[in-house]
Image (tube, rainbow, N blue to C red; front, side, top):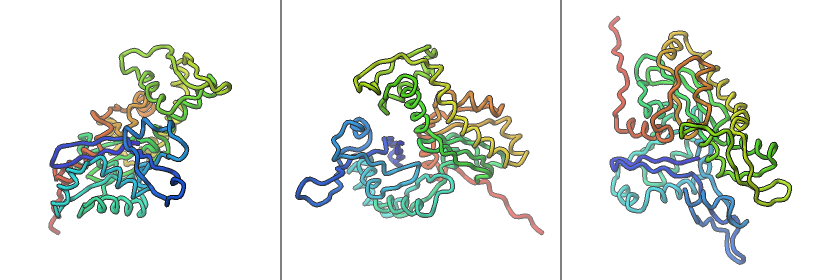
Length: 331
């Protein structure tokens, strides 16, 4: 899970891991404190390597703020002191935040309180699906169908949009974390190897064949389940691909459910325009060809799938996306 912020008018985009470390228990004789020790990439490196009195905090879970205090500390650290002082001198500072489709009022209130605590005078709440579609360059304001699949860490959101609104949408509780878990379980069951969470992503990059060729096997380092000693094994990449097929099938079910609820005219538009993948987990190996095979539609990945939602937010808050105005007809 990553936190991305687009700072206007400074044209600065901040992209960091939404992770922070704080002491889990106070030192002897002291009052309970929540001291922030590390955030972002520095905290990610420390994950799994800390003593028991230091714990990891994820203030953002599945696109929703679950810890307002830690979320504010995370954003303050990402933005920096200089920009925060500049914000205080701007009495009309506006902020916009993406929220998952169908988010609860409590989650909306948490997002507003987090940004107002940082000095925002006005907070706009935007659906993640709409913002990602705008950031991907889709003509969401036109009377034609556009389909966006936002693959996050915990969930995958699927929607068909037209005239600037969501026609049909579905949230699937499968994301990058489920893919990581499937890889870890495969190595544990078939190779008796415990794999560190941070070692899963390099393995996925090998599976994706980003270098033009996917090797038949790759060497993976981890801890032996029985002895507890460090061990290396050669893993068949095709078998790992088969292991992640099961969670990816849930995403296909969500896409099929959205298409079945759409009017036939919009589905016909999608046959030409296709489906756009966005989100930090859009580059999951095998996802794009699997969706194409299941739907017989063109499937494209956004140019910058991890930041297209926040770029769409910036375009919307600056008024670069104009809705289609329909003049009422005379009776």
